[in-house]
Image (tube, rainbow, N blue to C red; front, side, top):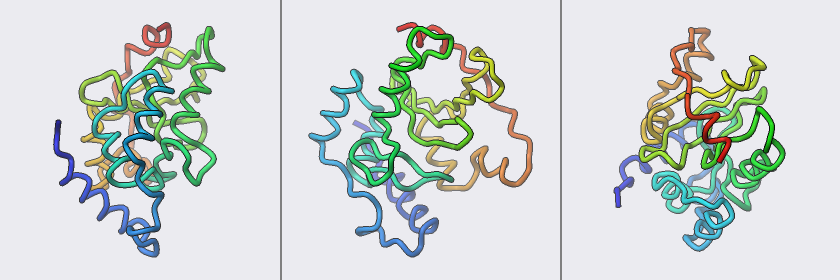
Length: 186
């Protein structure tokens, strides 16, 4: 089992910088007990990536992160929950050219239909960007970060594509995710 305590501490410091008026000892949604994560994984039909589980169990049930902030996994204060978003996408898009890939959990809504998602089937927890706006389902999935750890490091250090986009810089360096179509068929 990997020890993510150092990264979680850096995430906590950054979350405190983002929301200085919210005390981290009660302002974020409370972390989830392991039993809630186990139940969530049963509903999903797959295990969360270990770092994502650690974030929800050892830090907070969402409510922090870049821009619109991480979804709560379950039972959070916002209308969008990661599990509900995944199950709805898998159900409503099934059998269409926009079918949602199996094991790809939405964790953050960027707005305009775009989502940050964790590929819980990849060993590193690859973070994907879903962007349906070009209107082509074969060009809607991009590799944002090779690992969830890298993605959180981008958040902590203010180096993610979202920072560049906000500054008006080009953000077209993401490679496409070629597994989308295959994984959607599972």
